[in-house]
View 1 (tube, rainbow, N blue to C red):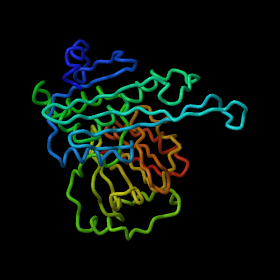
View 2 (cartoon, rainbow, N blue to C red; view 1 turned 90 degrees about the vertical axis):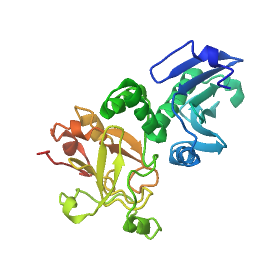
View 3 (cartoon, helix red, strand yellow; view 1 turned 180 degrees about the vertical axis):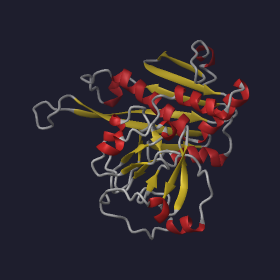
Length: 315
């Protein structure tokens, strides 16, 4: 498909690569062409497997599909007369090879049963498709390839390349563990993956143990787009036991209930949401993705209801 659309795609450019959005046979279509290589079957599989917790994923030969679904309602009260709801979706297709094409199509609303009461359908579908693409580009092996491409072609540092990729993917969600693990699992971590972990029922009681660095073992770090986040007490590859994350902005994720107070209170935007499906305490967490930017004001520590946060001033 990308070859058939090539001439029209090149007519519109945007910083990520080449982006085109235009009407075609009754639906909108967008094409992002990335100047990177993705032919290794294991890397293709990692894109598919890494995003399973965020989207519905399918894979066929050289193509990976990511589908995002959302529900629209014509009124708030489901018991009211005339209430209707419809599940809508948009699918992003990743075509691998010597270049990577990311394609999405927005079909007419009639495809979903003619729910013409839905407002701003095309605008929402376009937004969600771009959110899926940004999430893919920020969280998978494609992120590493894009960063390497920027470093090589634009002669910039890796830090600057990471910042460039983040600026180009403003709609990205943070997906835990979407990329291949940055470090080899230790024997203990492999044993933990076997499933013999006692999973708590709900959140642990707070406050966070301020001596966790002495009491808990270090575990595999998490590679955020701008910063490697240290972790303690994380067990296995699931989210059942997350332990404490952050060396200076430290959050016990097994206490955290994701009320969002820390995100709202932080004056320098240290935190952003990321998904942790399967965690007994909450299905999402505030990731300290900009931990080095912390000004040690203690605002987040003071507003956390379960007292899951401890700020250690960097010396």
